[in-house]
Length: 272
Image (cartoon, rainbow, N blue to C red; front, side, top):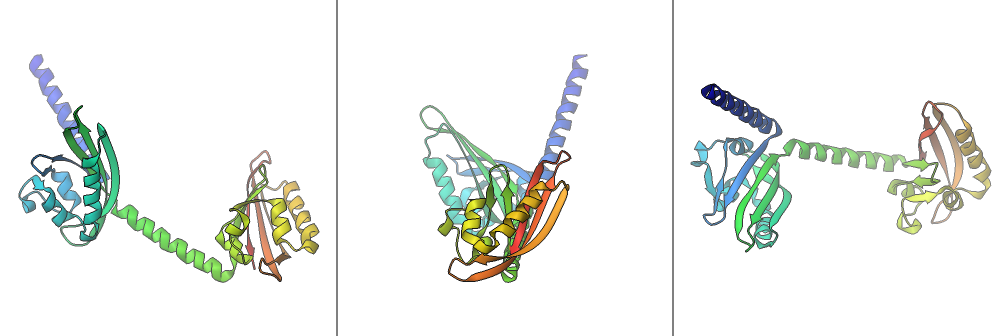
């Protein structure tokens, strides 16, 4: 019976290790340790897979810090990585932890990104007991962020060319939420008005032509009194440019309500 229990325990352990290994592979996550006295990193197959290579290609699972930096860290990011390592060693925290992101060199060519989690444990006298962590390949996330950044930049430029600005309105707090494009529409900046959130009375006083205030007020009242689940309407009125003169905008108003008629969102866009 004891022999059977031991066999079962081993099988369960092997299955757990296999499941953990598969999970780490899917997450592109690799564990490592660093021996401070010997200046040696201790890696595993998952680590090498992260860099599109193998332990055989680098002579084993133990590598010096200099070798790691030379073969795996992007040369432009070596100073940053070195500074983070120095910060960790200089710390006096019993349990030090920090994360950073930097570029890496794939063995088969190209550049990727990893997120590095660093952990250092010290004894009561400050001597390092363990220095360990994990690297995770975040290249796809970084590419997605860059694509999003480029898309946002292109959208911002398109809105600027179209002289179009988005806004939202919080009915309960009576606050408009604007952005830089909104202020540019009125030839001004957020600094001149103290922030991106302004009450409706302030907006009306500083941006709406006084002769058109009744028209704008009537449209707002019409929107608030509507019972439509999805209300939309457009109007045109005169505005006051901050640097003098009068302009015209088209305002698109949109309101979304829940089943009980409560306003969920009140938003729109102004176009010069």
